[in-house]
Image (cartoon, rainbow, N blue to C red; front, side, top):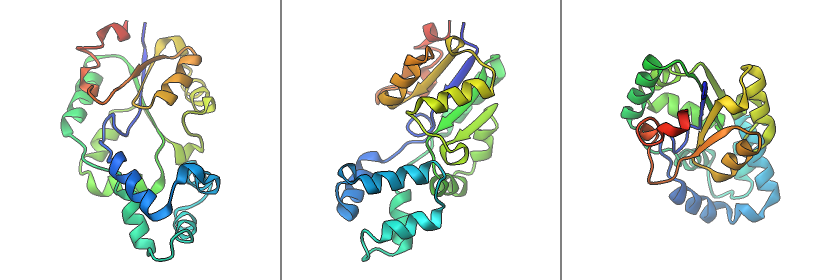
Amino acid sequence: MIKTLIFDFGDVFINLNKSNFNKQMYNVFGDISKNQTLLNLLNDYETGNINTEAFVKTLKKYNNSFSEDSIIKLWNSIIADFPYYRVEFLKNLKATSDYKMILLSNTNELHINFIKEHVSFFNEFKSCFDKFYLSHEIKLRKPNKEIFHFVLKSNNISAEETLFIDDTLEHINTASKLNIKTWWLKQNEDITSLVTVKNNLLC
């Protein structure tokens, strides 16, 4: 029986412009996937091992024609809209169930600050969760198994009684290996179908 729901954030609740963002990043910084130094930089920022100022200044070294403000604007361009009906879904789920609800997201400081500034109902959204974990604050990130161990241990919950919902298959695979039940949320699915379409997952 499922007692705990662990939710991802991006493309589960808030929509992301991944395709356009990746194209812009490629145009400005080249193929990041083949640049291990840049990959390490992004990982360090997302796990809070470097601060925002150092992150932006280091990125600027890879393209001096871009100002720091332009880099920040580009970095935040991945964030799209946040449909409020998903918050209403969460509020209803919280009011009508006994699930412990946890948010577990690979989110850095620039992105969460941008969201707080532009999403008027952010605090309302956050209050729906019993725990709200962001990678840059806990210094762990998906898909590493350590982040799942951290959440399970910190909340004294059983993997077999937990459902993890994420749009990234790599994250889902790690959780599955730890005996956490999973729902890979695909592009044509919406989190609000959790109860009506995926009711069998909650048994």
